[in-house]
Amino acid sequence: MTMKLVLLILCVATACARSSSNRTALHPDGTQERIVNGYAASEGKAPYAVGLRLNNGAVGAGSVIGNTWVLTAAHCLTTDSLTIHYGSNRPWNGQVQHTVNKDNFFRHPGFGNSAGHDIGLIRTPHVDFSNLINKIALPNFSQQGERFENWWCVACGWGGMANGELADWLQCMDIQVISNGECGKSYRSVASTNMCTRAIDGKSTCGGDSGGALVTHDNPIQVGVIAFGSVGCKSLPSGYTRVSDHLEWIKETSGIAY
Image (cartoon, rainbow, N blue to C red; front, side):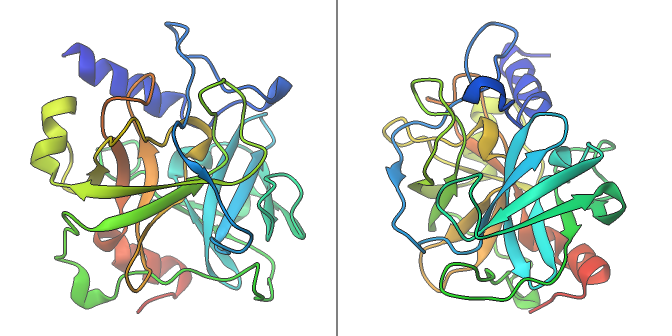
């Protein structure tokens, strides 16, 4: 096993950052998980984005895909309950807050058995949509074969920043999808059901950003769920679970389809 692959596994294992003392989690080598070179989101820029505070002390993110459904990473659903914060750029000050127990967590059955299936759903109480709370569309079934290579996207979250502190305001970055072949040069191999974005000017997602959405700039749809990255999160690609490869499971679980 190569060192780069070890770093990938370490990042996946600790990807939902701890929120105690408002600092990001530490990797075994002492490197902090962080998101760098993002920009502060304007109010309402990402009305689908929600903050997740897990009852085990970790934090993550998710996206609203329906009035009663949130899409996130499966590794953020390994706790007994979590609180979802909707409709605010401040992560733990949602206009609406719902605490949901594990009976409403749905992890993809492939998670933990093979790579590329770090995706999960949360069934929630009904949430009304507004200018600050709204769903993000998913790819339609005709796009299942689309790899979205070279598409420009935006990713947002409240993960750690360069100073080691969790963001207290939603941070976003504009990044470009790369081929899995290019990504595999950094991580030895990448599952076909994963996708990656290029680390441009040190921009990267990691840590408490886990579970958040990768959304296309044009005709916005969610194409990825933030899932992994390298230790340090500065120089290697960011990794996501590919939404278009999980549309059948999302439909079977939630009834949502396009």
